[in-house]
Amino acid sequence: MTTLDTAQAHFVSRFGDCESRLADAGPEWLAPIRRAAIERFAELGFPTRRNEAWKYTSVADIAVASLDPEPPARAGVSREDIRALLGSEASHEWFVFEDGRFAPELSSGETLPPNVEVEGLASALGKHPELIRPLLDRADLLDRPFAALNDAFQRDGAFIRVAGGASPQRPIQLLFVASPAASGRVANPRNIIQIERGAMAAVMLRFESLCKDVYWTNAMTQILLEENAELDLLTVQSESDTAYHFSSVDVRQKRDSRFRSHHIALGGALARSEIYARLDAPGVDCTLNGLFLGDGHQHHDSQTTVDHASPHGTSRELYKGILGDHSRGVFNGSVLVRPDAQKTNAQQFNPNLLISDDAQINTKPTLEISADDVKCSHGSTVGRLDEDALFYLRARGVDERAARQMLTVAFASEIANAVPQDSLRAQVEQLIAAKLERSRSAMKTAGRSPEDPL
Image 1: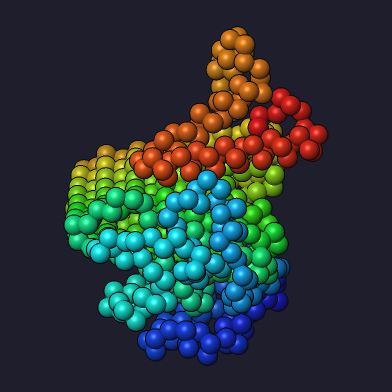
Image 2 (image 1 turned 30 degrees about the vertical axis):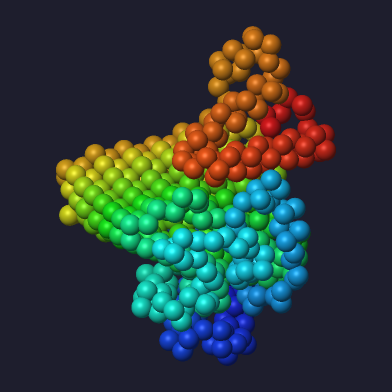
């Protein structure tokens, strides 16, 4: 058996070991869904580079690690740990999830408006089976091996429901933290977000770590936007540099709904994000913004699919990569325009900045158009810092290192500035600045030249 085959057998075997405990953690109707999911994972197995979507990303290191998909016992994470992790942001209202499970004792105790629900998915399963069951029992998700793995092993996550016409004044902030006990484990949080007709909301998913060892976060988020609903989703992935992080976001949009995603990838040894947005009705608007920032030997992989299935849909996509040291980046963006999706307006662009001779990016934006009355464009660029801009700053007394830093921050700021909520935008700016500072410090320790880009 190959290493990948052994890893596949390991997860299937572990499901058999803990299937009865999983059954005890949910309603009866969930058990056959879990069983179908692990059987589908057994069919698909770990992806190889022969799979086009995984051509530039190897999961061999995860396979070798033989991680345990059963969550650890509570590690005793305290409010003080959360405050130390969040710094100045700890004063804001947070819903905290420890190793994928809702931890109300660590959460801020926010008083929600009566038309907004936020709770753990485990408790919501019994309250909203009519909504949740069809979302969990989705055959199309099982064509992705790690979504199937999440389906099989998920125990908890976030459930958010914003009632029709509601518009919460403050963003709903969720913190997913890997505890020290996460070492050698896999967390499989499953999140469900429903924004009902005419409602508006902003949601932040922030992934952080208190674990310094190897672990894996395998997250799945499903979003349902009803007619004329609006959602701003900010995802910030800032896991430890020893972590593996896979996240998948699945979006279904109904008539005249508006979805804006802002995905910021900063952490992880190997990090992959997948977004699937299906524009199911006329008048739908979808915006996907992203930034991945890599240093050391990090590997960032961003996969997006925008499926225009109805006419008069609009999608805009801007994903930026900044790669230094020996880091690697991958961007695969696919825009599908189906035969009935006339009057589609779709734009996709992936500019990348390489600030090291050893950094590498593989980018593949694609359009697949089956309608004839559309306006679509796509493109990608790979380059270095603008020498004319560097000369302009140097001529005005800015030293080279500071000039390079200014231009790098400016390249990233377009994505940060697109976050409409002031409080969330400030967090993004702070985290990007902290990432760049850590990169500079690491290079100084390694004896790199002070003129190096970061």
